[in-house]
Amino acid sequence: MMNNQDKNQTDTTDEAFVSKTQLKKESKALQAFGKELIAMPETKLMQLPLNETTLRAVRDYHRQSGNIARKRHLSYIGKCLRNEDAEAVKEFLREDKFSQLRSQVAETKADPLDKMVRDLQEKGDQQVQILVEQNAAIDRQALRQLVRNTNSAKDDVKRKAAESKLRSFLENYLVD
Image (cartoon, rainbow, N blue to C red; front, side):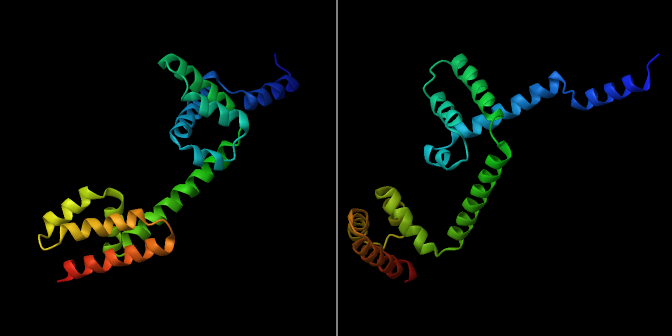
């Protein structure tokens, strides 16, 4: 027969007891979080509140060549993350994703002509070709020259002036 004191001891040990299954689930969750960290660019990793050991482990993952080695290293990253404040890191990532969404929304609300200028700068001749196919009245040679000028401008003043010329050129052809 159990006395009252033994009963109290088993109650407290039950509260502190964590099953192997629960430990494995937590480990898998940390490894999944490690996969998210591995996919991040280096600049974002440097902003995260992680200690040097964890950062080194995440960087070293990409040096692993074999699949089994990567899997083993991923479990090591999970082990390193046990020592981190994972909630603080996840909160930082949530805020970062929120700021990215905000910038995307602002970008979609921006003037469509600004988006077209940005696309021309980024994609170059491909976007020029698409624009000429959509509107045959556009002077291809002049458009390509304006795009080249905006991309080759070295200082901000010249780049802004070239972008302004490109923008007014597009306004003339697309508004008419």
